[in-house]
Length: 114
Image 1 (cartoon, rainbow, N blue to C red):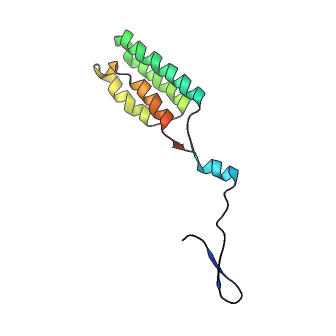
Image 2: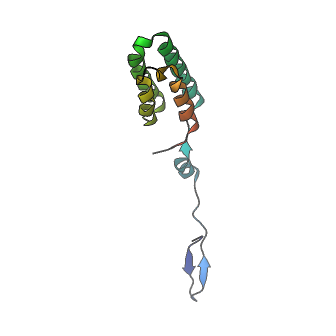
């Protein structure tokens, strides 16, 4: 249905204009992406965490928990953070830069505003 139909006095159908979106309504309907500062901070956290994972292989679990908390603070709660924790606890896959991949993913994916 493209437009609402209203009847005039004679019973003829008259098309009504569509509702206008005001700027504040449009802003509420649009999805949000992280700002550039959040991307830079998240990338710095992720690069540091991945470098520390390689440098100190016995400390990967505490480093990953702190990294997950910091990325959650920067980007907000996202379920993808839990998904990244799974390969981080497996010893061989901890060598891959999964935190950096997560930050680029979170920066590229739009999140609906609530």
